[in-house]
Length: 245
Image (cartoon, rainbow, N blue to C red; front, side):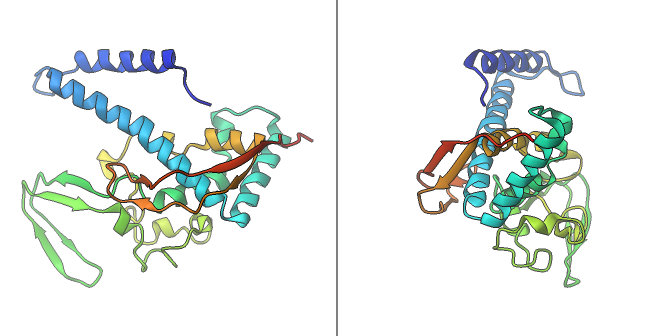
């Protein structure tokens, strides 16, 4: 399941035309360098993060029998209800798969550092009660790789446990709106978040293939711009379509 080269070229061209004609609020046109940077950012956001998220999701699912079984059972229930139909509404019903992918994005998040510029003076207080003053014009940084493993928010933070996001636990809300920051937050949160949960890809794989991870569980490549895996992730697969009752 991937876009053809023509489709990818067409979509990239369409986006570039919008960027070329774009202007800032003060009516200044975007420069060629800015348009180039925006296109490169779009390529990284759409290609690297999606492929890396899919890889991490698979590595975790294929080494977690409990959660793999739950994800497959969910696909069987949906096929019994909807047949082969997979559209936006059906994807929205895939809560188990959603939690599995969300947990893979927590361990680790694609970006290890998010930066924002302070537009006004403000203060923040830590959970220990220590207050910090942030002056206007300063750069504020947060690390999702650190924030998503805070033990006072996530129980056993180094353990892959998609159920932590389920009803009754909801650890991603334990400390407020920014307990889970894989996509940043606020008005400048990642616009691609709805697309990052690559449920369409894994729904297809779970329905049509029996898979086994034959290489060791991958190490994290912290040196990469987008945090991926070190080396190759090798999977043995066999076509095995799930039955529709």
